[in-house]
Image 1 (cartoon, rainbow, N blue to C red):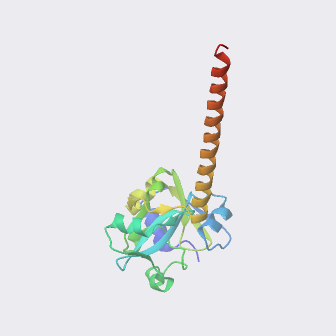
Image 2 (cartoon, helix red, strand yellow; image 1 turned 60 degrees about the vertical axis):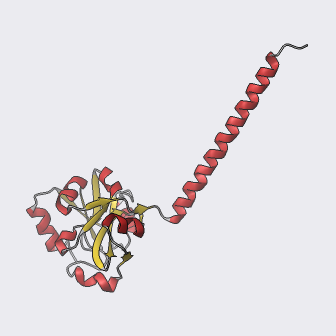
Length: 196
């Protein structure tokens, strides 16, 4: 399947600059990023979630996971959950399953963007197929998609655990340095005291 006609017409009508990037078939955001030699955080994944049973697109850097409570709170919803493939497949009839682009408006769906994306100059995302992606400026994406920007992404548990271990290690090193400095000051002070 090639770049969806709906997406191509939309981007061309809006006269935005974009690059179509072809790659070997890949089915996860991290696989696609690796195939395209793009940083994982620059590749944007699109996740269909249900906010109070209504489908919406959650757009975020590939390495992050959705914090459903944060997204629900940001949207003013009581509940947020992942939509199953059977629930969203018919919403994107011109796309390969799971390869939908981040423009919810093309499919009459609201779009939420993780706030860390706003710091990116460029983003790369699926073009409706498992063999093509699009690179474009984040500013153009934001202008066209008009997403609600919110904080709802978090690193995977293994990364959080690694960050905690690294922070604990830094704290231990700092405490050892502080203790050694204190010991050195005492030694200097003791050496300076006149003998009686």
